[in-house]
Length: 484
Image 1 (tube, rainbow, N blue to C red):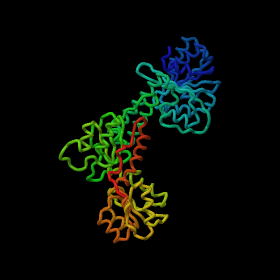
Image 2: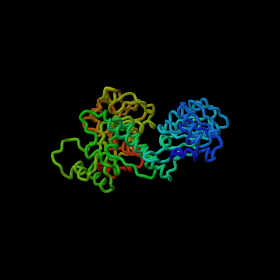
Image 3: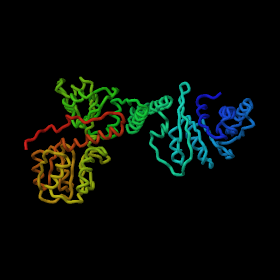
Image 4: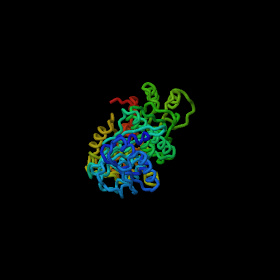
């Protein structure tokens, strides 16, 4: 008489008196009473029609005398009267939560809940209202797969849960039905994530795709990512909407639909980096500097973009967006300097967008430092082989900095009253300007002031995309040699 979904609900009933909310034809109640698993029951429904059908079912089964038929909106008109188990099946998760919320005698009751939709909503509601899942199973019936939740009220204190737990609860993945159910949830998340990704909503897309990947890992599978997904996460980290005019960022080499095997990270995509990617089986390289910036007049293996294309390696480069991103390169520099100097951001060094976003910062220094001491600190923090600098001879009370080759922004630092300016790739005339202006100028190297972003990116990828191998290129080294 019972379909697989209701059979599973029946298996979780433990007591002698069951209450079936939304009973419909009362098939569950008739089964439980006929088999002697329960001695009495309540069959409740919000409409008269289902109750009439329920009465006919119970009469035919010969158990009508053991059942109270009650017209009720959820549990509102159902008296407690010795009920041991409450079954609410075949409804949406939000409706089930509202039915439970309106009842004041749930302590000690064995709850069997079978939501047709909004499962995460229901699980979050349960744990947010003092309930705990003591068992959960899945069942497959034809092309449909359902989950049945066994819960009890344990306390009045809300418990926070993860999005993954809200989706899967306490399913046991040694059960094939649980694996089928979980994979269906992953498929839904992937579909939603791809739609969001392709509509430009990268942050929401990444959440869905990452959660789907967590589910796949939970079931013992290997998640699948595409080049588009890698780009979407980079777009979340450093939004392309902040691209500076004239910059060349984005997917510069490769097919966006290619499945990703492994991701290699480097400041620059050099031929050595491409050859390393081939060797370790990485088919995506993520870099800060564009692998194609100037026009290409010849195509051969001496050009890393050509070499990457020849070996089916995608190249994703985020240049100016990563310089200006919240948490990006210049924020990382601030975080490196702040503990020692107790910095406070005062202004953007070079605003380039209408909202004020741009390159570098001007900061006040709460812990004054002499120019030579600052130079030693910078060498240690950036890991530079050398730090070139001009010693102004006066304490640094305000400093400015900008990653990369931003020596041209020295006049901006001077105009904002900075006592020191930190950057890379300083030219001779800029050293002269610093001397004449009495500002301490520091060249910590283009590489060293930007390569600090690579560990940050790898950490973001490892956190956001479970099961994806993200590694730093051994070829990611300072391209300059020094004789000391």
